[in-house]
Image 1 (tube, rainbow, N blue to C red):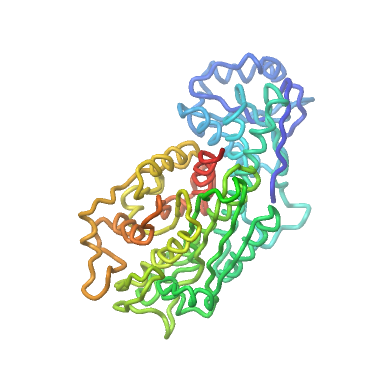
Image 2: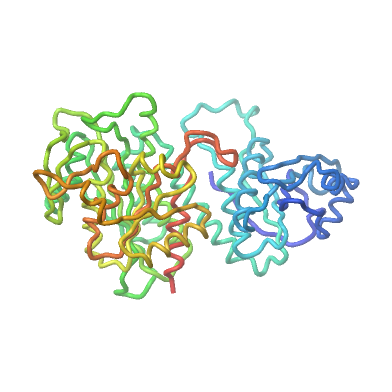
Length: 491
């Protein structure tokens, strides 16, 4: 369920709300703008700060109750020493999660000078923290259900100047909600056809051009690399293309590409059973593209964008591709498949070649591509690689603005030797060493002639543990990176 967001200017002490979240930096003094609120609480709020009961540390909270008019509860939330927008976003996420757990139904959010990027961050954060996935669970009786967080009001200095930032925050929040829901759905529901329907829904809402090619069309396009992954499944694979035309007619688009493995058993090179259920998240790159296209269309950015998704499942079957098989991609290059569990790069190879048809100004792809990136960067940072340093720098800056940490890894020529094959142009794995880098170099073979950047989000698109501000599961990464990159390219 989406949240209704609004802004309101005025004295927070006079605002009737079940919960007022006050976001404060480290070592705070009580804000003068909230003096009346402190008085309504008998000075308890300022005393809590003076006595160090609350010090504004990252993720620190303190809940106080008061009778009478105005806010029924005040939740102090610490931003720590983080950069302001990042601090507001994270604190708002924690507030949203607490509000959802309490079942208050509505919440007001206050932070000093909540305008511009900080206001946008507060909206995105509150949406992130309050998101829940309950649609496949039996619900308790109506009388015992806690209220979902349905309305969030951001307390701003002036409502007149807040419209654009509020709309931008809502656009990104809705895009992330789409991405997280798609990622959370199990593989028997979120099939390639389901992703195609989700793309069509976005297209209908925003008048985007949408095409979904199946096995027959991809065979005519000679996508032997993509189809090798799909040859073991009875489900029709899908190459999904969405076109947003916000720029000038004929202007080169930005291309966003996503890996959409709706479930990945590893194929003949089968994965271990423990944890295999998490492979429903192997389509998180595709979910990120669809969520970003929703946000971009809502933002009405003045730039052309094409979103491309390669969707299939990688399963074990009598017809499944085998280690040692050689396939030919749509650009003519042959690939020796040494490990069928390195399948995402095989799908993306043909999707990247297809992207060339649009003559894009830049291409950014996202994929839960390698376990090696988790070893290298953990679950905090996305691995970034590319063939154009200026575009890599743009993507890193976009990730920073979006609050999704990213770090560049090298694509040095010396690593290419690891992909040499005895019987084909290249092989699909390079061994244990530099696994993320060799995967990036493999993709680079199919991105030739385009400014291209790859995001390996295997460690960041979903979490196997509770992150505090959000529960375990999909995080919404890389929606904000995609959106910020495209915003940076808009006129």
